[in-house]
Length: 310
Image (tube, rainbow, N blue to C red; front, side, top):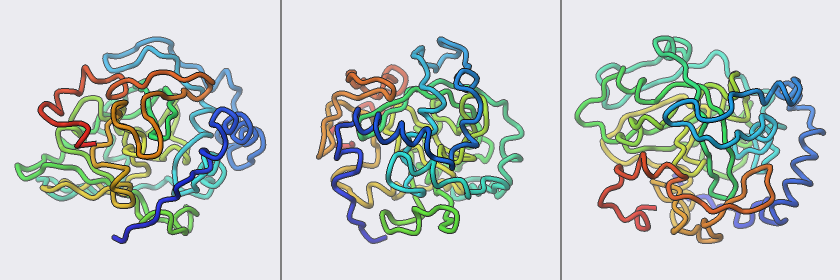
């Protein structure tokens, strides 16, 4: 793949982020007809969710609102502005959906998503999510652990990594008509990361199906890594013996490493990662090591230099 020049000044950097969010994004909340299907219920009904820690992996922080989660997004397949995914994803068709799982597995699968998920009990997880640009949310996801799927296809002894690929549909995803990145979007995890019980395949949020702008109908959620690792609208998972390419590492290897763990001690070349702003708040909060999940996942990186393996 060829290296694509990454825009050096994203639109959200041109204005101080609180002003950008309050002015541009809140205007989009009330003015974009394309998101009406996703925000029709009252705010109180949308945000009805059990408060507090429900399971062993849940955060006890207050969830971000359904409106915030579905109207402030990075999903370059629909555009580079935070409001673009909600505005321009209305033509995307998440059903029917086929997922292929291949590579170093004993049981390759090329199945409809409903059939892939059928054997598993759906779970609800409330995770902190941190964006590399310095903002964060708390999202009530619905889905299943990735380990459940991978164990069912039986990885062979050669499997060391899992490569993921997003659907390629430029006729439905207007951002793919622009050479902002090389399409389709690709990501990867080490197999032990993929099998960790925190790693989640989301099919919904706030108790309903995933909206298009949030990665419908099937996306990865890795809460101790920056958000761009959580690849959306997945159509293929391939188990590999070698480290797979990842979109942002291909585009800007000096800025985005393969691991992409939330590490406040490793700054992005163009901004600090030591603090973050929770969407809906105007103050800054301290960024937590591995996004607050260090106690659960730091063993994955024993002996590794997390400044070198960024």
